Image (cartoon, rainbow, N blue to C red; front, top):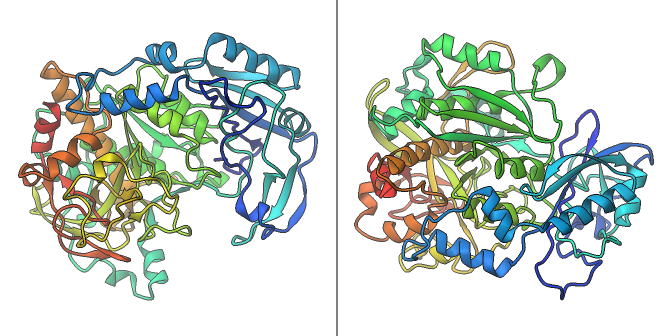
Length: 554
């Protein structure tokens, strides 16, 4: 997806099929929005021919069937290949684009007036800049503007599905429109109260038990509640955060100063496609999401080797960098939601992450039950771990877990993108009449953690706030950091990191070990679904217990 920035930024994802059977000019995924093809969005005009666009051209995997099989085996505890992960270079050698294909794409783009600005063969992408006229010529489209059917703004889009004279079939052209703008998945308590016709004071009915100002929760409180130990800090582990905007690290400094703590983890702001890593409120940039992502990750894993904010204007540029950067982020949090033209757009990268042992967590959203209107993606993708929300109470400030119910606005349900149910959700005992899940489509979330309006936040170079914000945005980086603790323990045991653990925990959680590893959330509801015993479509399997670390580390 593409954000609206000072200059137009577009990512084009080309993932080629492995066989020669595909026709050269075919584009195998959907690109034109229904509002355009169905003419429910009125055409306003066209983009200026000399307007500059930034594109990220992504090449495909080879041997798709082989990759599918490898990913299934590398995450299957019963397979001899379990956790035999690939390095980025090994992935390229086995499944990435050939040097010849990569060079052909570079030459094609150059011949069409586009300037190479970045990318790599390991990243399966070529980053370029050029005029709208050059883009139209290269992809045989006209870039039009349309009145958005549900929002008070104009968006741009191609008038037809893209084709090329490249001689190689394309997978997808990501970012040719800005119909869906990415948004952070946090919510302000006052906004929630207004939307539901209640007073802000009535939203949180119990006094919070955090160690921050006004008893608000800090990231360290989440560590105390869900881990409770001191030995594991995430040492030796590298955590990544997926961000559409930069941040001002002064806000992180303010947070730690105000709560009397110290951050010892080096934080890097990495632009993946030339997007600014700065974020100043006076310039119209809000870094609430970006700062809370850091405080939750650092609070859970205060001894990380590194925390990198991967910042970009396009999803393909961000995730490409995440699969190649050194050191490789082995656990990742994403607290943004957006709707691509085709929900399979990032699957080549999600599969690459699974093959490389990277754990990708996506916040499930803050608009209750998933629907076409309440964006679920990427949380409903079968290759990510979806994180829902709970309402947590601890025994005291900085104390142990006491109780937990479902958070009233936790996103979850049945995939509105019609993504097929993965094998691990087909297991007997997962979907039943009690949780009302689907037996044919992907259900979510998979796991959960605190998301209630009980946190302390600092952002936008202004006064910090207590108990004002909530959302699954808090829960996703929390889980990413928890897995850093798991990976630290696993490596200390002589093993390997855990990667995508859904194929591991689903079979375990339909056995008696479930109660050992998870807090089973059995009360509360969100939208159409209620928290029930076992798996449910509000909290998934629930929140983690410290014992889960040893279970996964084994």
